[in-house]
Amino acid sequence: MVNELRERLKEWEEFEFPEMIEREIKVIPKEDIVAIVGPRRVGKTYLMYITIKKLLKKVPRENILYVSFDDIFYRKYNPKEILKEFESIFSPNKKYPIYIFFDEIQELNEWGRWLRSLHDSRKYKIVVSGSSSSLLLKEISTELRGRYHSILLLPFSFREYVKLKKQQNYEDMVEEYIKFGGFPEVIKLDNKVEKKQKLIELFETIFYRDFVGRHRIREEVVARNLMEFLFSNVGNRFSITKIHNTFRSLGINVSKRTLWKYTNKLEETLTLFLLRPFALSKRKEMMLPRKVYSVDTGISSIIQREMPMGRLMENVVFEELLRKNDNAELFYYIDTKNEVDFVIKRGIEIDKLIQVCYDITDFSTKEREVNSLVNVSYKLKCKKLEVITKDYGGEEIVKKRKIKFVPLWKWLLS
Image (cartoon, rainbow, N blue to C red; front, side):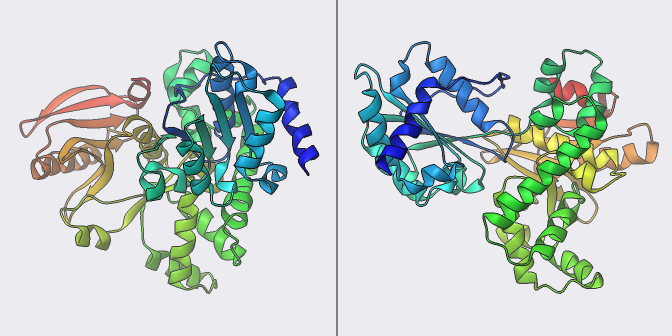
């Protein structure tokens, strides 16, 4: 087994990097462990390769190790065995740190314990990646706190999409982006039929590998129906009771407890997000429903045909807020008379309220959306108000509150 490991590690010496696309996110190995976290197939491995390639300009190759635990072969060994062989083969230069890149670390048993042990040795600078929410900073165990920094990597932003396409017809481009999303493999394709086929393939991979396979889910029919239901309801409030009743009407017998369990497991794949309502008490927050959002509108579009553009647009805004507001808390707001799509909280202050309105030209729609925004702004004592629209921009004063209207393409490029 040792000889097998030695042969596999030696392959790193001859490894040639594939063609890569620069992302907005830059990874800098630090004293703390750096974790690149995101769903499958968003480019975590390529971001590692880009980071390694930049390192090679100043660090010898023998001081850099890359291992993917997506490869079953490496799961037979623990990290200390792998590093011992690596150092034996390559004899790293002692003038430089040893840089470790562990891809899909969640596939390794007791990964948190191993990372803590390697970090405590002070010999390594460690970068890991994973497609499980358990690697996000807010969810890691206490044994890694103070030693760990996580970066959320999502499908391509509209800015990255525009840069790749090298076009300037932003309004047409944003429609395409909304319909087909930002997964790198989809963006590269020009044919719409091929794009849809690739999105179906991505959905199946996520379902079988990250949801059913990883969590050893037994009731596959229930799991598929739940995943399809949630992906097709982006921008909507949901409750387990509602899903339970829907499934019963379809003849699918499953307990509410199982539905909750499966929903939580699906969240762990980082392909679906449940947005909490803003409330002044934890009890009230728990009583109110959450809203469902997808990591990528392309997948939702293939599952729910004729999905309203307004809901897809709201989902795109949610994705971008995840990218832009990593140090902020994100909520939605609802009471008996008003609803606001996004509440951004920094510290104890409400920083901004955002409403998403696809067609602002309809008077009754505009009045409803704007009045809700203004009413809630007084309740939450927030003066920064935005309405993101399909194509309308400008500023208006409503009930002594200034509201900024921004076309979606312009807001995404900012």
